[in-house]
Amino acid sequence: MEMKALSTFNQDDAIQNSKTSKIKNKYNVSCMSLKTLFNTYINEIDFLSIDVEGYELSVLNSNDWQL
Image 1 (tube, rainbow, N blue to C red):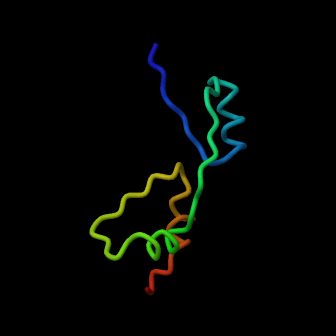
Image 2: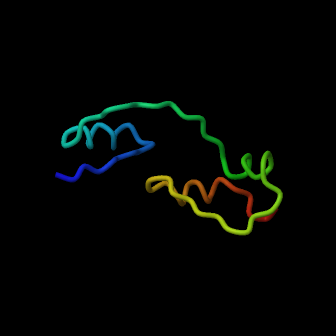
């Protein structure tokens, strides 16, 4: 039987997933807005790929695209 990995930023989703899958590990991770990320680490963007488990719009909205 093929096992798939599940990950989420949402505790309610994790609880729902635990009804059909075993939660093996739980990690606390630091998060920051795109605006903070770009201002701190990045001068120029050639390509951007965002995979945040369904929170893409929230992440995109966290940036000041006028800069």
